[in-house]
Image (cartoon, rainbow, N blue to C red):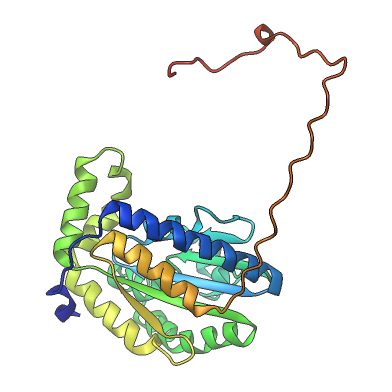
Length: 268
């Protein structure tokens, strides 16, 4: 991946970015309507290093969409009971029904990344996972699920810049955990784990799509554009509706405003 790090394009201007973002958001609304109409089942997996921008991309994809159709899964640490289950079990229960899209902000691939590097699983569990993934994902696809997997690639310099921004900005500092800092220290270990993961799970039926995420604006637009290309859809936007006339007040008299507790108007 080093050859891509030598080619760093100039960041897209904000006006051009916002214009293209609005266009893609409109197309995503059309895709959402098609998924619901056709009863499709779609799973989109987002993986990558800490600070690669997974959350930002997911937010841009979903911000104009109906959460009843397009939802996000970001599972926390497994419970003691879940640790005794089949590894994939808690993820299987999060898969979509007909007419739904589920976006995984990290997924079952935790075992190939953080669990492997931090020693949260045994060697036997790790290699069993890599053997199982192709058949598990094939089973999802054969059940009618459209599975799309993205790996967000950033270089060391980009991660360092973003970590520093989070340290300097109290609004972002919550994004940094002790685990994130340890991941920064183990850059090479994570690189090796990623390479092995791609080698074993980049299959013909469920390939990985790598995304250059060093420039956030570019990565967001590129993923949104690519996602739209993965699912053929038609525009089912309903015709414009006419607003009905409002009901006349008649003898209704609203209670005085003083009866209620109002939020203080500190801003105009």
